[in-house]
Length: 75
Image (tube, rainbow, N blue to C red; front, side, top):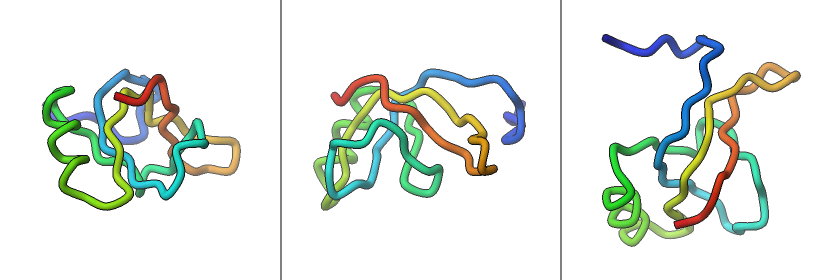
């Protein structure tokens, strides 16, 4: 079963986030790669510049119409 990208259901998941700085708490969809596990996120982040493993919640549609992921914690 494929997930509806415009669904209002927000999920917690592991991801690799591309960001030059880890100060932000929300990230646009195009900077976030959702992965299957914590271990996969950590391994993928080590291989890429300016990428960090994290646990996120999302995607959620912002008031401006963007789809965002919200940081729960860095791994």
